[in-house]
Length: 539
Image (cartoon, rainbow, N blue to C red):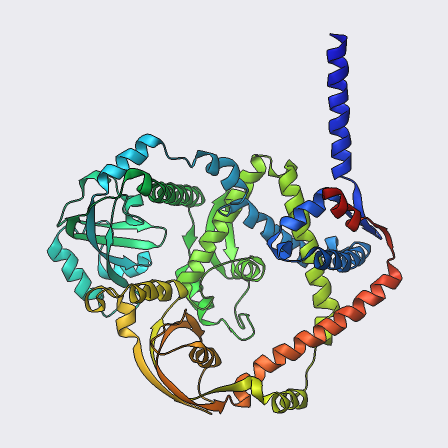
């Protein structure tokens, strides 16, 4: 009994020693410290994972000097930084692979063997599914009452004709097997699809689906063991999408948002994309009202501006009122799920604390750059022209080219269209309507200042017949198919002026950063540096 107690005590002491070992300070510069645990966490970060050990240590020393300055100058008290960190925290709590997802949802995303076997038996029939996808409720109301089901083939075809000229609405056909993603997530009974069924409108994460089951055919199945992983991924996708959908519906039901449509339309119309602001918009204008923790809260234009400037990631155009409403929905989801994460104990979670410290350090480093480096970055017109004249070989291109372009409203539409093109589906019947409506043949003669640099760069890289990835031109996305090109020429200075400016600014930024680091070394000497010994210990 006594020996057992001694062994237990030794194990406890050994564990404590291991914790102290991993918590030891590897780097100290002024008030800034980096521990062994933090070092291991940083190495896993995508931002640093591609660096060699030497590059990583150089980066950590430079950032350590900046962070010592930041702590000395109380960056944590700056309101703008606090607001950035608030939105970063909300993003971490609410996104897929974020705190709530990983703690609450992910452990339950499992598919049983019984479900896999059941799905396998249903996949020997493929269905041709015609889809009308209407992005918003407002657009849906333009064509039909969402409470009225479009339940006949005649009604579906009539609606398809009515929406055919509306470029906002997608209309396509695809062949699908059980569980019929993404549509199947929203169907009540997947086992009873029949040719001629018309289903919808189904409100989904991406808008309103109205579908027609136009045909079916039996297809031979591969052996179960070969098909099993594909089925599992399909079923897991369905579970994930179903949770996201149900979670959003629960939040919107609790929040009960009331959108002020005209105020939103007016604000979208006044957005200045060049300066990323809203001149003339009353910051106190109410865009939405919602409920949170039993209170009715107004959401103003000022709140939306704050969201647009601090949210780490959002989709859509700030000049599009429907996209604005989706962003306001994202705001509500983030706010509710952050509160749920806090209720689950996120703020005391070790993994979260390490994560937020890393992100806080990143925000401090960026703020230092914005205050100490960016104001010094200036390039004159003479410098730009001199660089162009002395590096003409870098701006060589074709002389003439002929291209076919497919113009799309957003990146997702362009990628869907590209997949159809690459798979060589019969485009007369199955291509998206956006591809048909926005098809154009363009002949390019160089040098010419009227063409987009991304298009020229796409053509330079392509061989005849190749189809590009989506290329952003203005606010739309183009797929570029090269039909022919010949000769050589030089891209005009006006078209590459911005590219040259970026290159020179990067060079100057590196130089100014080096000067700042030299100054910091004089003020904040390194008192502890065990980075190399940590590597030796791990080996």
